[in-house]
Image 1 (cartoon, rainbow, N blue to C red):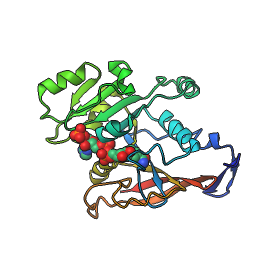
Image 2: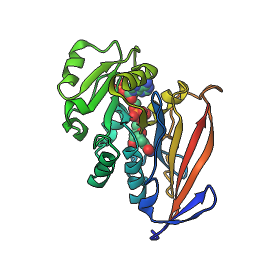
Image 3: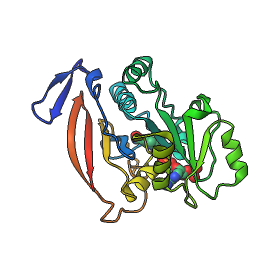
Image 4: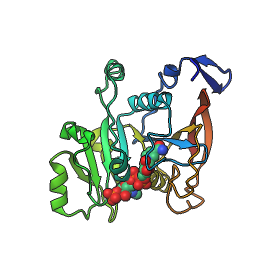
Length: 253
Ligand SMILES: NC(=O)c1ccc[n+]([C@@H]2O[C@H](COP(=O)([O-])OP(=O)(O)OC[C@H]3O[C@@H](n4cnc5c(N)ncnc54)[C@H](OP(=O)(O)O)[C@@H]3O)[C@@H](O)[C@H]2O)c1
């Protein structure tokens, strides 16, 4: 990879160090303001061999951490947690940056599940119980809730099969003070957020790789979105490092 990255949009473009991409990112607050961050292959797949970690470069992972650092909470579906073992921990320099901004060192971790089938051994559950919120549907059996409560804070967020996302976001805002939420998918959770009109922007890394697996997930997966939910995207910024592209889109509602 070359030493410098490029800012390509908006003009004027210019060179910058890869670590400067999103280094000064600030997300606007809301109830909460919700951004999605995903990485995709050039043929539109969100996983290679069932994992996203094999798609993006070290620069993409650095960007992911800097976007996380701008959020009060980082959220993921249980499907991603089961496949990937996501760990939302930020490195020390970003912890210090957040503290300088008057924020807790680490963003709140949020997991969404319908079944309550969570891999308890994942590193995200080694955090304190207060710093991990698991959103479950109203119908989750009490026994399951008690099991999850051993390692995380559980909230019932309405819903039958899955937690109701609108309610889940209301709880995050009202009870946990989350004004800026980052969803790291996966594709099913992204679909649910878009269908409900709850997503405000999309960070998308387009990696210079091909999957070839037509059956693999894309960055949004579910039924075709209806016209109201099929929001248009407006490009806000575009960076490149080597052949990898980093797009930031506003989701127009
Ligand atoms: N490229 C990327 O940036 C990226 C990012 C994340 C994930 N991925 C890839 O995506 C794949 C996993 O896809 P996925 O769609 O299974 O992941 P997902 O969206 O993380 O998980 C889906 C699960 O989330 C739970 N859920 C809670 N509320 C939901 C709601 N309202 N709607 C839908 N689901 C809800 C359900 O868990 P229960 O089953 O417990 O009910 C559901 O099965 C993996 O291969 C992973 O590598 C890629």
